[in-house]
Length: 361
Image (cartoon, rainbow, N blue to C red; front, side, top):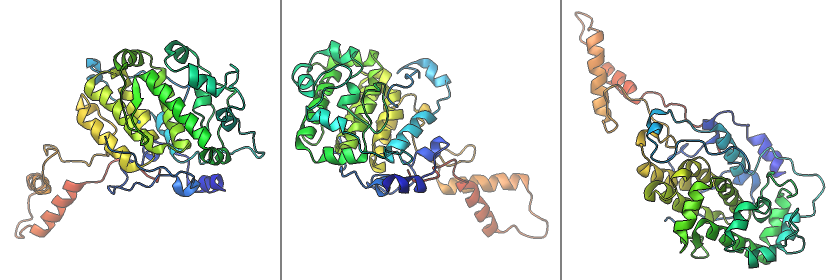
Protein backbone atom coordinates (compact mmCIF):
# COMPACT_ATOMS: atom_id res chain seq x y z
CA UNK A 1 0.00 0.00 0.00
CA UNK A 2 2.90 2.32 0.80
CA UNK A 3 4.28 2.02 -2.73
CA UNK A 4 0.81 2.47 -4.25
CA UNK A 5 0.20 5.66 -2.30
CA UNK A 6 3.69 6.86 -3.12
CA UNK A 7 3.20 6.32 -6.85
CA UNK A 8 -0.08 8.25 -6.69
CA UNK A 9 1.39 11.13 -4.72
CA UNK A 10 4.69 11.68 -6.49
CA UNK A 11 5.27 12.57 -10.09
CA UNK A 12 8.49 11.40 -11.65
CA UNK A 13 10.72 14.50 -11.62
CA UNK A 14 12.07 15.88 -14.88
CA UNK A 15 14.38 18.65 -13.62
CA UNK A 16 16.93 19.10 -10.86
CA UNK A 17 14.62 21.66 -9.23
CA UNK A 18 11.80 19.12 -9.02
CA UNK A 19 14.18 16.67 -7.35
CA UNK A 20 15.45 19.06 -4.70
CA UNK A 21 13.19 20.53 -2.02
CA UNK A 22 16.06 21.51 0.28
CA UNK A 23 15.32 25.22 -0.01
CA UNK A 24 11.59 25.02 -0.67
CA UNK A 25 10.80 26.62 2.71
CA UNK A 26 12.66 28.64 5.30
CA UNK A 27 11.10 26.68 8.16
CA UNK A 28 13.39 24.31 10.02
CA UNK A 29 11.19 21.26 9.60
CA UNK A 30 12.95 18.06 10.67
CA UNK A 31 10.29 15.74 9.26
CA UNK A 32 11.78 13.23 6.84
CA UNK A 33 10.47 13.58 3.31
CA UNK A 34 8.65 10.47 2.13
CA UNK A 35 7.59 9.68 5.70
CA UNK A 36 3.90 10.03 4.92
CA UNK A 37 4.20 7.75 1.92
CA UNK A 38 6.18 5.01 3.62
CA UNK A 39 6.00 5.56 7.37
CA UNK A 40 8.88 3.16 7.99
CA UNK A 41 11.70 5.43 9.14
CA UNK A 42 12.16 6.32 12.80
CA UNK A 43 15.61 7.88 12.96
CA UNK A 44 16.19 11.19 14.74
CA UNK A 45 18.32 14.19 13.77
CA UNK A 46 22.00 13.60 14.40
CA UNK A 47 24.20 15.90 16.48
CA UNK A 48 25.52 19.12 14.93
CA UNK A 49 29.26 18.93 14.57
CA UNK A 50 26.21 14.12 1.63
CA UNK A 51 25.69 8.32 -6.82
CA UNK A 52 24.04 5.41 -7.62
CA UNK A 53 26.33 2.51 -6.91
CA UNK A 54 28.28 1.40 -9.91
CA UNK A 55 27.43 4.31 -12.20
CA UNK A 56 29.46 7.24 -13.50
CA UNK A 57 32.74 8.41 -12.07
CA UNK A 58 33.30 11.87 -10.65
CA UNK A 59 34.78 13.77 -13.58
CA UNK A 60 34.47 17.33 -12.29
CA UNK A 61 37.52 19.56 -11.77
CA UNK A 62 39.58 18.83 -8.69
CA UNK A 63 40.03 21.06 -5.65
CA UNK A 64 42.17 24.07 -6.45
CA UNK A 65 41.96 23.55 -10.19
CA UNK A 66 42.20 27.06 -11.64
CA UNK A 67 40.30 25.93 -14.73
CA UNK A 68 37.22 25.44 -12.58
CA UNK A 69 36.58 29.17 -12.31
CA UNK A 70 36.11 29.35 -16.08
CA UNK A 71 33.80 26.32 -16.28
CA UNK A 72 30.06 26.83 -15.87
CA UNK A 73 29.18 24.47 -13.05
CA UNK A 74 25.99 22.46 -13.43
CA UNK A 75 24.26 20.05 -11.11
CA UNK A 76 23.80 16.45 -12.19
CA UNK A 77 20.19 15.51 -12.92
CA UNK A 78 21.19 11.85 -12.66
CA UNK A 79 22.40 12.38 -9.09
CA UNK A 80 19.45 14.56 -8.10
CA UNK A 81 16.89 12.05 -9.40
CA UNK A 82 18.66 9.08 -7.81
CA UNK A 83 18.66 10.71 -4.38
CA UNK A 84 15.09 11.96 -4.83
CA UNK A 85 13.93 8.38 -5.31
CA UNK A 86 15.95 7.22 -2.33
CA UNK A 87 14.61 9.90 0.03
CA UNK A 88 11.06 9.02 -1.02
CA UNK A 89 11.59 5.27 -0.49
CA UNK A 90 11.45 4.58 -4.23
CA UNK A 91 7.80 5.63 -4.80
CA UNK A 92 7.44 3.83 -8.15
CA UNK A 93 9.31 0.69 -7.06
CA UNK A 94 7.25 -2.51 -7.26
CA UNK A 95 8.33 -5.16 -4.78
CA UNK A 96 8.02 -8.87 -5.59
CA UNK A 97 4.53 -10.33 -5.17
CA UNK A 98 5.92 -13.39 -3.42
CA UNK A 99 7.92 -12.89 -0.21
CA UNK A 100 11.59 -13.54 -0.76
CA UNK A 101 13.86 -15.48 1.54
CA UNK A 102 15.20 -12.36 3.25
CA UNK A 103 18.70 -13.12 2.06
CA UNK A 104 20.12 -9.88 3.44
CA UNK A 105 18.75 -10.59 6.91
CA UNK A 106 19.84 -14.22 6.83
CA UNK A 107 23.34 -13.13 5.83
CA UNK A 108 23.49 -10.78 8.82
CA UNK A 109 22.24 -13.58 11.08
CA UNK A 110 25.25 -15.64 9.85
CA UNK A 111 22.98 -18.27 8.31
CA UNK A 112 24.11 -17.94 4.69
CA UNK A 113 27.35 -16.70 3.08
CA UNK A 114 27.56 -13.87 0.61
CA UNK A 115 27.53 -14.94 -3.01
CA UNK A 116 29.63 -15.56 -5.04
CA UNK A 117 32.53 -15.57 -2.54
CA UNK A 118 31.02 -17.99 -0.02
CA UNK A 119 32.10 -15.85 2.97
CA UNK A 120 30.03 -15.56 6.16
CA UNK A 121 29.51 -12.27 7.96
CA UNK A 122 31.36 -13.44 11.08
CA UNK A 123 34.49 -14.11 9.03
CA UNK A 124 34.36 -10.59 7.62
CA UNK A 125 33.85 -9.03 11.04
CA UNK A 126 36.62 -11.04 12.71
CA UNK A 127 39.28 -11.09 9.97
CA UNK A 128 38.80 -8.25 7.49
CA UNK A 129 39.35 -5.20 9.68
CA UNK A 130 42.67 -3.65 8.70
CA UNK A 131 43.02 -5.84 5.59
CA UNK A 132 42.93 -2.81 3.32
CA UNK A 133 44.01 -4.65 0.18
CA UNK A 134 41.07 -7.03 0.46
CA UNK A 135 38.61 -4.25 1.25
CA UNK A 136 39.90 -2.21 -1.70
CA UNK A 137 40.04 -4.86 -4.39
CA UNK A 138 37.08 -7.11 -3.55
CA UNK A 139 34.00 -5.69 -5.27
CA UNK A 140 31.31 -8.19 -4.24
CA UNK A 141 31.01 -7.72 -0.47
CA UNK A 142 29.79 -4.12 -0.33
CA UNK A 143 26.30 -4.96 -1.68
CA UNK A 144 25.89 -7.59 1.05
CA UNK A 145 27.25 -5.52 3.92
CA UNK A 146 25.16 -2.49 2.97
CA UNK A 147 21.98 -3.63 1.21
CA UNK A 148 19.60 -1.23 -0.53
CA UNK A 149 16.24 -1.27 -2.25
CA UNK A 150 17.99 -1.00 -5.59
CA UNK A 151 20.21 -3.31 -7.61
CA UNK A 152 23.99 -2.94 -7.38
CA UNK A 153 26.82 -4.40 -9.42
CA UNK A 154 26.70 -7.77 -7.63
CA UNK A 155 23.62 -9.35 -9.17
CA UNK A 156 23.81 -12.21 -6.68
CA UNK A 157 22.91 -9.75 -3.92
CA UNK A 158 19.16 -9.28 -3.50
CA UNK A 159 17.47 -5.94 -3.07
CA UNK A 160 15.93 -5.07 0.27
CA UNK A 161 12.15 -5.06 0.66
CA UNK A 162 10.04 -3.15 3.17
CA UNK A 163 9.09 -6.33 5.01
CA UNK A 164 12.73 -7.39 5.26
CA UNK A 165 13.67 -3.96 6.61
CA UNK A 166 11.02 -4.29 9.33
CA UNK A 167 12.36 -7.72 10.31
CA UNK A 168 15.93 -6.42 10.31
CA UNK A 169 15.03 -3.53 12.64
CA UNK A 170 13.64 -6.02 15.16
CA UNK A 171 16.78 -8.19 15.17
CA UNK A 172 19.34 -6.94 17.72
CA UNK A 173 21.95 -9.42 16.47
CA UNK A 174 21.64 -8.18 12.89
CA UNK A 175 21.86 -4.50 13.91
CA UNK A 176 24.91 -5.21 16.09
CA UNK A 177 26.73 -6.84 13.19
CA UNK A 178 25.69 -4.03 10.85
CA UNK A 179 27.35 -1.49 13.16
CA UNK A 180 30.51 -3.59 13.29
CA UNK A 181 30.59 -3.69 9.49
CA UNK A 182 30.19 0.10 9.49
CA UNK A 183 33.18 0.52 11.82
CA UNK A 184 35.30 -1.71 9.55
CA UNK A 185 34.55 0.50 6.56
CA UNK A 186 35.13 3.68 8.55
CA UNK A 187 38.55 2.37 9.55
CA UNK A 188 39.25 1.60 5.90
CA UNK A 189 38.50 5.24 5.12
CA UNK A 190 40.62 6.54 8.04
CA UNK A 191 37.70 7.39 10.35
CA UNK A 192 36.61 6.10 13.74
CA UNK A 193 33.16 5.84 15.31
CA UNK A 194 33.13 7.69 18.64
CA UNK A 195 29.80 6.81 20.22
CA UNK A 196 26.35 5.33 19.81
CA UNK A 197 25.07 8.63 18.40
CA UNK A 198 27.15 8.22 15.26
CA UNK A 199 29.75 10.91 15.97
CA UNK A 200 32.98 10.33 14.06
CA UNK A 201 36.53 11.68 13.93
CA UNK A 202 39.84 11.05 12.25
CA UNK A 203 41.33 7.67 13.12
CA UNK A 204 44.98 7.17 14.03
CA UNK A 205 45.69 6.03 10.46
CA UNK A 206 43.94 8.99 8.85
CA UNK A 207 46.88 10.40 6.89
CA UNK A 208 47.60 7.24 4.88
CA UNK A 209 43.95 6.35 4.47
CA UNK A 210 42.84 9.84 3.41
CA UNK A 211 45.58 9.90 0.80
CA UNK A 212 44.34 6.58 -0.53
CA UNK A 213 40.70 7.73 -0.39
CA UNK A 214 41.52 10.91 -2.26
CA UNK A 215 43.11 8.91 -5.08
CA UNK A 216 40.74 5.91 -5.13
CA UNK A 217 37.54 7.62 -6.16
CA UNK A 218 35.47 4.49 -6.74
CA UNK A 219 35.19 4.44 -2.93
CA UNK A 220 32.93 7.50 -3.19
CA UNK A 221 30.31 5.18 -4.70
CA UNK A 222 30.75 2.94 -1.69
CA UNK A 223 30.29 5.84 0.70
CA UNK A 224 27.04 6.80 -1.03
CA UNK A 225 25.81 3.22 -0.68
CA UNK A 226 26.81 3.09 2.99
CA UNK A 227 24.98 6.34 3.72
CA UNK A 228 21.87 5.10 1.96
CA UNK A 229 21.99 1.79 3.82
CA UNK A 230 22.35 3.55 7.18
CA UNK A 231 19.05 5.26 6.48
CA UNK A 232 17.32 2.08 5.36
CA UNK A 233 18.32 0.06 8.42
CA UNK A 234 17.58 2.43 11.26
CA UNK A 235 20.71 4.60 11.50
CA UNK A 236 19.59 7.79 9.78
CA UNK A 237 21.12 9.85 12.60
CA UNK A 238 24.59 8.51 11.73
CA UNK A 239 24.64 10.27 8.34
CA UNK A 240 24.96 13.87 9.47
CA UNK A 241 28.21 13.50 11.48
CA UNK A 242 29.91 11.53 8.70
CA UNK A 243 28.87 13.88 5.89
CA UNK A 244 29.93 16.92 7.89
CA UNK A 245 33.35 15.40 8.60
CA UNK A 246 33.87 14.58 4.93
CA UNK A 247 32.84 18.09 3.88
CA UNK A 248 35.24 19.57 6.39
CA UNK A 249 38.13 17.42 5.18
CA UNK A 250 37.33 18.14 1.52
CA UNK A 251 36.65 21.88 1.77
CA UNK A 252 38.45 23.19 4.84
CA UNK A 253 41.35 20.87 5.59
CA UNK A 254 42.07 20.05 1.93
CA UNK A 255 42.85 16.43 2.78
CA UNK A 256 40.19 15.01 0.43
CA UNK A 257 40.03 17.59 -2.38
CA UNK A 258 38.88 15.10 -5.02
CA UNK A 259 35.85 14.20 -2.90
CA UNK A 260 34.24 17.59 -2.68
CA UNK A 261 31.94 17.27 -5.69
CA UNK A 262 30.73 13.79 -4.70
CA UNK A 263 30.12 15.05 -1.16
CA UNK A 264 27.95 17.90 -2.42
CA UNK A 265 26.16 16.10 -5.24
CA UNK A 266 25.57 12.79 -3.43
CA UNK A 267 26.51 12.53 0.24
CA UNK A 268 24.56 15.59 1.40
CA UNK A 269 21.43 14.53 -0.47
CA UNK A 270 21.23 11.13 1.22
CA UNK A 271 20.16 13.04 4.35
CA UNK A 272 16.38 13.00 4.59
CA UNK A 273 15.73 16.00 6.86
CA UNK A 274 15.63 19.25 4.89
CA UNK A 275 16.93 21.31 7.81
CA UNK A 276 19.98 19.07 8.13
CA UNK A 277 20.70 19.33 4.41
CA UNK A 278 20.39 23.10 4.61
CA UNK A 279 22.82 23.18 7.53
CA UNK A 280 25.36 21.06 5.67
CA UNK A 281 25.08 23.20 2.53
CA UNK A 282 25.41 26.46 4.45
CA UNK A 283 28.51 25.03 6.12
CA UNK A 284 29.91 24.02 2.73
CA UNK A 285 29.08 27.35 1.10
CA UNK A 286 31.18 29.24 3.65
CA UNK A 287 34.19 27.12 2.72
CA UNK A 288 33.75 26.60 -1.02
CA UNK A 289 36.27 28.12 -3.45
CA UNK A 290 35.71 29.83 -5.78
CA UNK A 291 32.50 30.97 -4.05
CA UNK A 292 30.77 31.96 -7.30
CA UNK A 293 30.82 28.31 -8.41
CA UNK A 294 28.78 27.08 -5.44
CA UNK A 295 25.60 25.86 -7.13
CA UNK A 296 23.88 24.02 -4.27
CA UNK A 297 22.56 27.04 -2.39
CA UNK A 298 19.02 28.49 -2.39
CA UNK A 299 17.61 29.97 -5.61
CA UNK A 300 18.67 33.60 -5.97
CA UNK A 301 16.22 36.45 -6.37
CA UNK A 302 16.73 38.71 -9.36
CA UNK A 303 18.37 42.02 -8.57
CA UNK A 304 18.59 45.22 -10.56
CA UNK A 305 21.94 45.93 -12.24
CA UNK A 306 24.25 47.77 -9.90
CA UNK A 307 22.46 46.70 -6.72
CA UNK A 308 24.78 44.68 -4.49
CA UNK A 309 23.93 41.52 -2.59
CA UNK A 310 23.63 43.51 0.64
CA UNK A 311 21.63 46.35 -0.94
CA UNK A 312 18.40 47.13 0.89
CA UNK A 313 14.94 47.15 -0.61
CA UNK A 314 14.92 50.94 -0.32
CA UNK A 315 18.12 51.18 -2.38
CA UNK A 316 16.61 48.92 -5.02
CA UNK A 317 13.42 51.00 -5.12
CA UNK A 318 15.44 54.22 -5.44
CA UNK A 319 17.42 52.71 -8.32
CA UNK A 320 14.15 51.76 -10.02
CA UNK A 321 12.79 55.28 -9.56
CA UNK A 322 15.89 56.81 -11.12
CA UNK A 323 15.70 54.39 -14.04
CA UNK A 324 12.04 55.21 -14.67
CA UNK A 325 12.54 58.98 -14.39
CA UNK A 326 15.37 58.88 -16.95
CA UNK A 327 13.41 56.95 -19.55
CA UNK A 328 9.80 58.09 -19.01
CA UNK A 329 9.31 61.84 -18.43
CA UNK A 330 6.20 62.79 -16.44
CA UNK A 331 3.14 63.96 -18.35
CA UNK A 332 3.06 67.78 -18.49
CA UNK A 333 0.49 69.43 -16.32
CA UNK A 334 0.10 66.37 -14.02
CA UNK A 335 2.49 65.58 -11.20
CA UNK A 336 3.75 62.05 -11.10
CA UNK A 337 2.22 59.92 -8.36
CA UNK A 338 4.61 59.10 -5.51
CA UNK A 339 2.38 56.20 -4.62
CA UNK A 340 2.62 54.80 -8.12
CA UNK A 341 6.39 55.25 -8.21
CA UNK A 342 6.74 53.45 -4.90
CA UNK A 343 4.69 50.54 -6.12
CA UNK A 344 6.70 50.29 -9.34
CA UNK A 345 9.97 50.42 -7.42
CA UNK A 346 8.80 47.70 -5.06
CA UNK A 347 7.94 45.36 -7.92
CA UNK A 348 11.27 45.97 -9.64
CA UNK A 349 13.20 45.36 -6.44
CA UNK A 350 11.49 42.09 -5.64
CA UNK A 351 11.13 40.56 -9.10
CA UNK A 352 10.02 36.96 -9.69
CA UNK A 353 11.91 34.13 -8.10
CA UNK A 354 14.00 32.07 -10.43
CA UNK A 355 13.32 28.38 -10.94
CA UNK A 356 12.54 27.27 -7.38
CA UNK A 357 11.53 23.71 -6.48
CA UNK A 358 8.13 22.70 -7.75
CA UNK A 359 7.18 19.83 -5.51
CA UNK A 360 7.59 18.19 -2.13
CA UNK A 361 10.58 15.90 -1.98
